[in-house]
Image 1 (cartoon, rainbow, N blue to C red):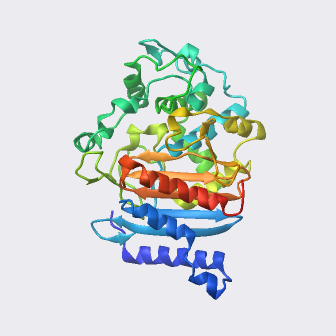
Image 2 (cartoon, rainbow, N blue to C red):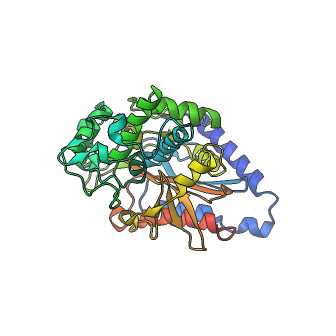
Length: 388
């Protein structure tokens, strides 16, 4: 899993060349000033994270910045094209496929879960006949989040014991069904990974193919996302990548890179890079993936009070967040967290500006300093040319 010096040198050289092309010609005085993107990346690393990679794009002008290491064992530096687990940023990919099926007339946002998955959501007050596809996408279903009962996410010992376990979507949903719903469908908002496990199952019922295959054929291949991978049950990250590290809030810190991601499934399984995520969000906002009616549905948001501690003023659409900018206006995004990795991103409504940043490790998690530093980076880069 170690990266050869030669491949890292090639990647670094290419990144520097791209950055040089994007920034040239530059006056000597401006060249002496510190790059604000690099300054923000350094600030994130300073909170205690292991490695940080960021990319900012404005009207086709790409800039990269890195800090820290990709692998503490070898000391290899984090590089611009290293891949990483994107966690819940996967949800926007899944939501895009669902909305494509809606646009094709094969699925309705008003279809119930029970229509496609009879008997799956039942027991303890759960009733799939009262929950719609829209409510799954928007986290207004009221279904309990199965990850709250997941030992792999609760402690170092739990992670080590279960990191290679294979789960089926049915098993993950069954964990949630052991609990009563948090509220009646459509009456409130609460983030629940269970919603997207069910959406992956619905994609399979509608198309006859797995959600992984549909994301691959509908998004990854058409956009040429050569470094975006849906690993299934494979625990490894292919090619040059960032290793992940976590102490699960109590220590000790361990390398958590190897993980059977079936535990996340459609809620957070995908591996990607900052460059591929930039391409994806640009294409999405510019209408290359969804018809106008379905993109408008995705962008129609409701208050998301459970996320306001991290994102003040945030609203949630169909697999997409809307977050205010300090300079006015706002941007669309979907962050992602999975053991060892935290991803934040943002794209302006016209797709002209994109910022993506990933950190490995936990940083100063209790004080949210690392989190706020990542959010500041996205806000800074999207505000660089004025309000969005």
